[in-house]
Amino acid sequence: MTCESLTTAGALLAARLSRARRAAVLTGAGISAESGIPTFRSGANALWRDRKPEDLATPEAFARDPGLVTGWYLMRLRMLLDALPNPGHTALAEIERRFVERRAFFSVITQIVDGLHHAGGSSDVVELHGSIRHWRCVACARERQLTADFVRSESERGGPIECGCGALMRPGVVWFGEALPTHAWALADAVASRAEVFIVAGTSAAVYPAAGLVAIAKRAGAFVVEVNPEATEATALCDLVVRARSGEFLPLIV
Ligand SMILES: NC(=O)c1ccc[n+]([C@@H]2O[C@H](COP(=O)([O-])OP(=O)(O)OC[C@H]3O[C@@H](n4cnc5c(N)ncnc54)[C@H](O)[C@@H]3O)[C@@H](O)[C@H]2O)c1
Ligand SMILES: [Zn+2]
Image (cartoon, rainbow, N blue to C red; front, side):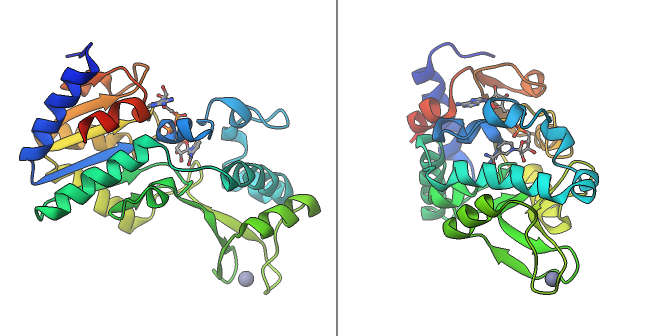
């Protein structure tokens, strides 16, 4: 059912959540749109130096031209330097706080790599696609958290980022064609299978296996709710559809 009134939908969802012992939200790039970060297929992400994200976010692209791929990630990191969590992120953190208060569980399963759920106060967060702030060496697996100063100076310098061992550093994100981190996926699968309420917010639900979590939750009997201004591939599975921006709607639940 599509709910036209945001207040009614908010009250309905709040009632469901208040009765649930376990609930979760699957988020995508749309949750950070109101923080000024473009989704995958919009703004500076949609096309960069004439290349689509699908042609940059792959192991093959990095092997072919590591400087180019590094440059794209540094551009995305620069957009992040001043980005703040928006009311959508903070509402989810507040919902988690209330669940924890009554010893219940509310998990964020996210496809975003910008770290804004943590910045917004959520602590039960599964980062399915990793983090754009954590880089690792392709040879010795040394890890490095990129600071704002480092991002600025490397952007000016250009070219790939070297590790002390002489090999290259790559962003700690999951690229197209790569498997999800085993532990993160197992956790997400378990959370989706046990959720009584499952919210799908700001994702086109087109990138698998993450998108498959909606069906997993639905099959296991969850009440599934979509929060997205546009129809997605998950819409047909949803018990409640809210056509709104996440930063506008999610605060109405708390
Ligand atoms: N911020 C980030 O970390 C970031 C940014 C871009 C892409 N990505 C990557 O993009 C991949 C693509 O999948 P995706 O589904 O996350 O992104 P997507 O770009 O495919 O879809 C974004 C969805 O968000 C919706 N949306 C836009 N603004 C919204 C708002 N204010 N409130 C609610 N919904 C809104 C759109 O209608 C769309 O359905 C993921 O693998 C992810 O790792 C991450
Ligand atoms: Zn190294």
